[in-house]
Image (cartoon, rainbow, N blue to C red; front, side, top):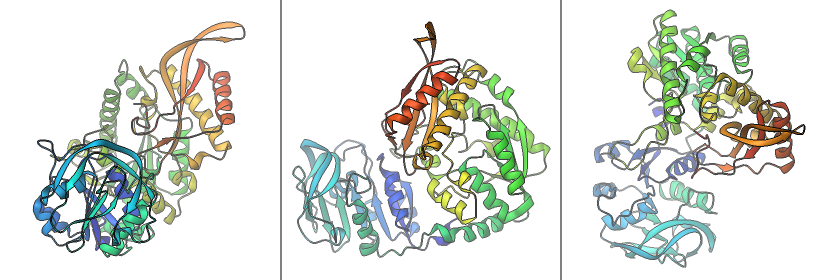
Length: 518
């Protein structure tokens, strides 16, 4: 791993399928402690070799009372390092170490008040009766030997437990979600008071290490990078260029699915400002021809991904003998795209930049951000002096506007979506809200409605506005945009975008919805 040189102290998170597992990792890293998520099926030898300062067992949708529920090796609790079980993780500790778990008469879901019962380093400086977030259907009916209850709620007599000698702790609630008011303090108590971690995960000092690591790995070999203009590939290109200079060659493939003005912006930014070797390939016709009559979202992604591979391979071979393929793959890309082998996590959607290309092109992968979240990549970009216009750019999906057009992707529908999307970005920026939003964009629906314009009947398209707030894209809330802004957006889109007579606003959060509609 590229970041091993900074991993003298780290936390291992074993994933039992919780939707909040990535939140745990984000909280730990925000506290400047490095951590990694691995499947709960990770072999014990690899757990031991990981040499963690502490282990966190995540929550999960299963019950330890169910047949074939995910377990972990009992030897985990004999390592002599601190362990924190969260929700399912706490019940698993109880189950494996000889206690008893039973179905709760009343499921506890949502906010609850936590009453502290006994002193624990886990709850140092945590206020009594603070709000926590519960999500469980089982409860502990008998503690394992050596354990004691240290907190409770109205519905959970054992809301928190500990074995102070073995340094094993359990929480029935989720400290990693924002609804648990003092969740960060509880996790920090585990990291610093119990695990004795040091704050050595500082993005500011990571740039020099990553440049050295890239140089050591690549040597004098040549690297090809698919540059999209987004935050991830842009920062990756600048970082790699700093490491190996002109041995990096970037290809920008115009797939015809880009936002208005995107191609010109990428060319001027990277060729003129950063002096990076960049070739722009116009492949719009090929992509759009391949998308003809495809309406299924996953088939769209696969078609675009396969066409990208085809074009990229053909163009790369024209330009020399490359050894490495550079990608801006992020940690959430890996987590969302890959089901942990033998574990309870599932694929949510495929990402175009996770797997596939190297096998066809016989290239080695160079993914400097594979262990990072997007906001960590943004910090790296700032440290390298990249402009805010690039660093603060809202995420744009690899498949582009194709997955924001529900149904057939045609040139006419792309023209409509581009026009509406441009208006949304203009007005969001004018309102000073662009940097406050994770994403804001238009979606063209496969629906037509009756309208009246100029005293005439119309039967035209519906366009949806999607705007969300988030810290890492793993979870998101719909943005409470001012009514005045929504009104202005609707008015401009209906008046300026030919083919649209109705605008709606999406107020779904993630989960249960995803940020993109497809």
